[in-house]
Length: 282
Image (cartoon, rainbow, N blue to C red; front, side, top):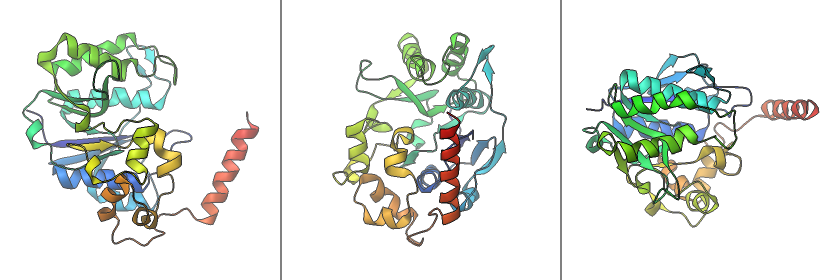
Protein backbone atom coordinates (compact mmCIF):
# COMPACT_ATOMS: atom_id res chain seq x y z
CA UNK A 1 0.00 0.00 0.00
CA UNK A 2 1.35 3.40 -1.01
CA UNK A 3 0.98 5.92 1.83
CA UNK A 4 -0.77 9.20 1.05
CA UNK A 5 2.34 11.26 1.79
CA UNK A 6 3.58 13.88 -0.65
CA UNK A 7 7.29 14.53 -1.21
CA UNK A 8 8.80 17.48 -3.08
CA UNK A 9 12.53 18.16 -3.50
CA UNK A 10 14.11 21.58 -3.94
CA UNK A 11 17.90 21.68 -4.19
CA UNK A 12 19.18 25.16 -4.84
CA UNK A 13 22.50 25.73 -6.54
CA UNK A 14 24.20 28.70 -8.20
CA UNK A 15 21.97 29.97 -10.98
CA UNK A 16 18.87 28.10 -9.77
CA UNK A 17 15.48 29.36 -10.87
CA UNK A 18 13.48 31.27 -8.23
CA UNK A 19 10.28 29.97 -6.68
CA UNK A 20 7.54 31.16 -9.01
CA UNK A 21 3.85 31.31 -9.81
CA UNK A 22 3.98 27.95 -11.60
CA UNK A 23 5.65 26.27 -8.61
CA UNK A 24 3.02 27.66 -6.26
CA UNK A 25 0.16 26.53 -8.49
CA UNK A 26 1.62 23.02 -8.86
CA UNK A 27 2.22 22.43 -5.14
CA UNK A 28 -1.14 23.84 -4.15
CA UNK A 29 -2.90 21.70 -6.76
CA UNK A 30 -1.18 18.58 -5.41
CA UNK A 31 -2.01 19.25 -1.78
CA UNK A 32 -5.62 20.25 -2.41
CA UNK A 33 -6.46 17.47 -4.85
CA UNK A 34 -4.50 14.53 -3.41
CA UNK A 35 -5.32 15.42 0.20
CA UNK A 36 -2.15 13.95 1.77
CA UNK A 37 -1.70 13.04 5.41
CA UNK A 38 1.58 15.00 5.18
CA UNK A 39 3.34 17.05 2.49
CA UNK A 40 7.10 17.31 2.92
CA UNK A 41 9.28 19.85 1.15
CA UNK A 42 12.83 18.45 1.24
CA UNK A 43 15.25 21.33 0.62
CA UNK A 44 18.85 22.32 1.22
CA UNK A 45 17.71 25.97 1.40
CA UNK A 46 14.15 27.25 1.58
CA UNK A 47 13.14 29.42 -1.37
CA UNK A 48 12.30 33.06 -0.79
CA UNK A 49 10.02 35.69 -2.25
CA UNK A 50 6.31 36.35 -2.38
CA UNK A 51 5.38 33.12 -4.12
CA UNK A 52 7.11 31.05 -1.44
CA UNK A 53 5.28 33.01 1.25
CA UNK A 54 2.02 31.78 -0.30
CA UNK A 55 3.23 28.20 -0.74
CA UNK A 56 4.90 27.54 2.61
CA UNK A 57 1.69 26.96 4.62
CA UNK A 58 0.84 24.01 2.35
CA UNK A 59 4.00 22.01 3.10
CA UNK A 60 6.35 21.02 5.92
CA UNK A 61 9.93 22.03 5.02
CA UNK A 62 12.53 19.38 5.84
CA UNK A 63 16.19 20.41 5.64
CA UNK A 64 18.35 17.95 3.69
CA UNK A 65 21.92 17.78 2.49
CA UNK A 66 22.12 17.21 -1.24
CA UNK A 67 23.97 13.93 -1.92
CA UNK A 68 27.24 14.47 -3.78
CA UNK A 69 27.93 10.83 -4.61
CA UNK A 70 26.20 7.49 -4.99
CA UNK A 71 28.12 4.23 -4.53
CA UNK A 72 31.31 6.26 -4.87
CA UNK A 73 30.22 7.82 -8.18
CA UNK A 74 30.18 11.64 -8.11
CA UNK A 75 26.88 13.46 -8.62
CA UNK A 76 28.03 16.59 -10.41
CA UNK A 77 24.72 18.09 -11.51
CA UNK A 78 22.04 19.17 -9.02
CA UNK A 79 19.38 17.34 -11.06
CA UNK A 80 21.15 14.02 -10.53
CA UNK A 81 21.48 14.75 -6.83
CA UNK A 82 17.71 15.22 -6.71
CA UNK A 83 17.23 11.97 -8.67
CA UNK A 84 19.10 10.01 -6.03
CA UNK A 85 17.50 11.81 -3.11
CA UNK A 86 13.96 11.00 -4.30
CA UNK A 87 14.75 7.28 -4.48
CA UNK A 88 16.32 7.28 -1.02
CA UNK A 89 13.35 9.17 0.41
CA UNK A 90 10.73 6.87 -1.11
CA UNK A 91 12.62 3.72 -0.11
CA UNK A 92 12.65 4.90 3.47
CA UNK A 93 9.21 6.51 3.79
CA UNK A 94 7.15 5.61 0.72
CA UNK A 95 4.58 7.98 -0.70
CA UNK A 96 4.06 10.15 -3.76
CA UNK A 97 7.01 12.05 -5.18
CA UNK A 98 6.24 14.96 -7.52
CA UNK A 99 8.55 17.39 -9.27
CA UNK A 100 7.64 20.98 -8.47
CA UNK A 101 6.38 21.48 -12.05
CA UNK A 102 3.66 18.81 -11.96
CA UNK A 103 0.14 20.26 -11.91
CA UNK A 104 -2.34 17.80 -10.38
CA UNK A 105 -5.93 17.54 -11.62
CA UNK A 106 -7.44 14.77 -9.48
CA UNK A 107 -6.80 12.49 -6.52
CA UNK A 108 -4.45 9.51 -6.85
CA UNK A 109 -6.56 7.29 -4.57
CA UNK A 110 -7.13 4.56 -7.18
CA UNK A 111 -3.35 4.16 -7.59
CA UNK A 112 -2.44 3.62 -3.95
CA UNK A 113 -3.06 -0.15 -3.86
CA UNK A 114 -0.02 -0.73 -6.10
CA UNK A 115 3.60 -1.28 -5.08
CA UNK A 116 5.14 1.24 -7.48
CA UNK A 117 3.51 3.42 -10.14
CA UNK A 118 5.36 5.17 -12.99
CA UNK A 119 4.24 6.88 -16.19
CA UNK A 120 5.57 6.51 -19.71
CA UNK A 121 6.96 9.54 -21.54
CA UNK A 122 6.13 8.21 -25.02
CA UNK A 123 3.66 5.79 -26.53
CA UNK A 124 6.36 3.13 -26.84
CA UNK A 125 9.99 2.55 -25.87
CA UNK A 126 11.28 4.09 -29.09
CA UNK A 127 9.71 7.43 -28.09
CA UNK A 128 10.86 7.61 -24.51
CA UNK A 129 11.33 5.83 -21.21
CA UNK A 130 9.76 6.15 -17.78
CA UNK A 131 9.89 9.65 -16.35
CA UNK A 132 10.88 10.07 -12.69
CA UNK A 133 9.02 13.38 -12.26
CA UNK A 134 6.15 11.38 -10.73
CA UNK A 135 6.84 8.27 -8.61
CA UNK A 136 4.40 6.50 -6.32
CA UNK A 137 5.89 3.76 -4.13
CA UNK A 138 5.39 1.79 -0.96
CA UNK A 139 8.30 1.89 1.54
CA UNK A 140 11.15 -0.45 0.65
CA UNK A 141 9.64 -1.33 -2.74
CA UNK A 142 11.67 -4.00 -4.56
CA UNK A 143 11.52 -2.10 -7.85
CA UNK A 144 12.91 1.06 -6.26
CA UNK A 145 15.66 -0.95 -4.58
CA UNK A 146 16.71 -2.38 -7.95
CA UNK A 147 16.57 1.11 -9.46
CA UNK A 148 18.72 2.54 -6.69
CA UNK A 149 21.23 -0.32 -6.89
CA UNK A 150 21.52 0.43 -10.61
CA UNK A 151 23.27 3.69 -9.71
CA UNK A 152 26.40 1.64 -9.07
CA UNK A 153 27.09 2.20 -12.79
CA UNK A 154 26.19 5.92 -12.77
CA UNK A 155 28.55 7.88 -15.03
CA UNK A 156 26.96 11.19 -16.12
CA UNK A 157 28.99 14.34 -15.48
CA UNK A 158 26.14 16.73 -16.27
CA UNK A 159 24.20 17.42 -19.44
CA UNK A 160 25.96 14.79 -21.50
CA UNK A 161 25.14 11.63 -23.47
CA UNK A 162 24.37 9.80 -20.19
CA UNK A 163 22.06 12.50 -18.76
CA UNK A 164 18.90 10.36 -18.59
CA UNK A 165 20.54 6.94 -18.45
CA UNK A 166 19.57 6.20 -14.84
CA UNK A 167 16.51 8.45 -14.43
CA UNK A 168 14.63 7.41 -17.61
CA UNK A 169 16.24 4.47 -19.42
CA UNK A 170 17.17 2.33 -16.40
CA UNK A 171 13.63 2.18 -14.92
CA UNK A 172 12.24 1.33 -18.38
CA UNK A 173 14.64 -1.63 -18.64
CA UNK A 174 13.87 -2.78 -15.11
CA UNK A 175 10.13 -2.62 -15.86
CA UNK A 176 10.63 -4.97 -18.81
CA UNK A 177 12.62 -7.37 -16.65
CA UNK A 178 10.38 -7.22 -13.55
CA UNK A 179 6.88 -6.25 -14.73
CA UNK A 180 5.27 -7.73 -11.62
CA UNK A 181 6.97 -5.10 -9.44
CA UNK A 182 5.66 -1.95 -11.11
CA UNK A 183 2.46 -0.55 -12.56
CA UNK A 184 2.98 1.47 -15.75
CA UNK A 185 0.57 4.17 -16.87
CA UNK A 186 0.25 5.57 -20.41
CA UNK A 187 1.65 9.02 -21.29
CA UNK A 188 -1.69 10.78 -20.82
CA UNK A 189 -1.61 9.97 -17.09
CA UNK A 190 1.16 12.51 -16.33
CA UNK A 191 3.39 13.23 -19.33
CA UNK A 192 1.32 14.34 -22.28
CA UNK A 193 1.75 16.68 -24.08
CA UNK A 194 5.44 15.88 -24.27
CA UNK A 195 8.29 18.28 -23.63
CA UNK A 196 9.00 19.11 -27.28
CA UNK A 197 8.12 22.19 -29.36
CA UNK A 198 4.67 20.88 -30.25
CA UNK A 199 3.97 19.81 -26.69
CA UNK A 200 4.90 23.22 -25.29
CA UNK A 201 2.70 24.89 -27.91
CA UNK A 202 -0.22 22.76 -26.74
CA UNK A 203 0.44 23.48 -23.07
CA UNK A 204 1.14 27.20 -23.27
CA UNK A 205 -0.01 28.41 -26.71
CA UNK A 206 -3.43 29.76 -27.72
CA UNK A 207 -4.34 26.43 -29.33
CA UNK A 208 -4.36 24.76 -25.91
CA UNK A 209 -7.39 24.15 -23.75
CA UNK A 210 -8.83 22.21 -20.84
CA UNK A 211 -9.23 19.12 -23.04
CA UNK A 212 -5.46 18.61 -22.74
CA UNK A 213 -5.86 17.88 -19.06
CA UNK A 214 -3.92 14.73 -18.12
CA UNK A 215 -5.70 11.78 -16.57
CA UNK A 216 -4.10 12.61 -13.21
CA UNK A 217 -1.68 15.49 -13.81
CA UNK A 218 0.35 17.43 -16.37
CA UNK A 219 4.12 17.78 -16.26
CA UNK A 220 5.03 21.32 -17.36
CA UNK A 221 8.59 20.47 -18.49
CA UNK A 222 9.94 23.50 -16.64
CA UNK A 223 13.56 23.02 -17.72
CA UNK A 224 12.51 23.53 -21.34
CA UNK A 225 9.54 25.87 -20.81
CA UNK A 226 11.01 28.25 -18.23
CA UNK A 227 12.47 31.07 -20.32
CA UNK A 228 9.63 31.43 -22.81
CA UNK A 229 6.59 30.49 -20.75
CA UNK A 230 7.12 30.48 -16.97
CA UNK A 231 9.81 32.97 -15.97
CA UNK A 232 8.36 36.03 -14.14
CA UNK A 233 4.82 34.92 -14.95
CA UNK A 234 2.21 37.07 -13.16
CA UNK A 235 -1.47 36.56 -12.29
CA UNK A 236 -2.37 39.23 -14.83
CA UNK A 237 -0.63 37.32 -17.59
CA UNK A 238 -2.32 34.08 -16.53
CA UNK A 239 -5.70 35.80 -16.80
CA UNK A 240 -4.86 37.37 -20.18
CA UNK A 241 -3.43 34.30 -21.95
CA UNK A 242 -5.43 31.48 -23.49
CA UNK A 243 -3.18 28.46 -23.07
CA UNK A 244 -4.10 25.20 -21.37
CA UNK A 245 -1.80 25.88 -18.40
CA UNK A 246 -3.21 29.37 -17.95
CA UNK A 247 -6.77 27.99 -17.87
CA UNK A 248 -5.78 25.44 -15.22
CA UNK A 249 -3.87 27.99 -13.12
CA UNK A 250 -6.45 30.81 -13.02
CA UNK A 251 -8.39 29.55 -10.03
CA UNK A 252 -5.19 29.44 -7.95
CA UNK A 253 -4.36 33.13 -8.55
CA UNK A 254 -7.88 34.52 -8.83
CA UNK A 255 -7.62 36.69 -5.69
CA UNK A 256 -4.15 38.06 -6.43
CA UNK A 257 -3.31 41.44 -8.04
CA UNK A 258 -2.18 41.39 -11.66
CA UNK A 259 1.44 42.25 -10.79
CA UNK A 260 1.80 40.03 -7.72
CA UNK A 261 5.29 38.53 -7.58
CA UNK A 262 6.64 40.53 -10.53
CA UNK A 263 10.36 41.36 -10.13
CA UNK A 264 11.07 44.88 -8.93
CA UNK A 265 13.57 47.35 -10.34
CA UNK A 266 16.32 46.38 -7.87
CA UNK A 267 15.87 42.67 -8.57
CA UNK A 268 16.06 43.22 -12.33
CA UNK A 269 19.20 45.33 -11.90
CA UNK A 270 20.78 42.61 -9.77
CA UNK A 271 20.03 40.02 -12.45
CA UNK A 272 21.74 42.15 -15.08
CA UNK A 273 24.82 42.54 -12.88
CA UNK A 274 25.02 38.80 -12.23
CA UNK A 275 24.60 38.05 -15.93
CA UNK A 276 27.36 40.53 -16.83
CA UNK A 277 29.68 39.06 -14.18
CA UNK A 278 29.16 35.52 -15.50
CA UNK A 279 29.78 36.71 -19.07
CA UNK A 280 33.01 38.46 -18.08
CA UNK A 281 34.08 35.37 -16.17
CA UNK A 282 33.81 33.31 -19.34
